[in-house]
Image (cartoon, rainbow, N blue to C red):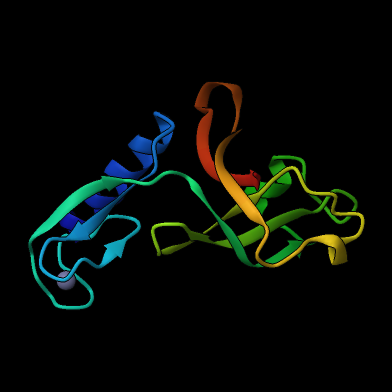
Length: 138
Ligand SMILES: [Zn+2]
């Protein structure tokens, strides 16, 4: 389990530096996000770290009206919902993140397949502010 923690720590540290990282298997070319020490496809341990462009398309989404505590503290509620989507990165893998910059008054106008790009949102109390991966319309 220690290896998993190291992996996610590197991923989140990179987010803080506004970089989206993952890994590519040197044996079969499979691309993962976050990075993986062992390839999910061919089980090779020959992975190299890569940096994603941050561009992709919206694969699916949902609008959250009843948020978990952390998002309530960030100011979201039934009258101020937020969107979470699955983004298909142009390099292949998919990742879930908040999608910002959308008009949530009419979620029917949000289009599957629309181009999006990486951004970050800051959350948490003043002394424990953290950057979180998000995407916005490109
Ligand atoms: Zn592989």
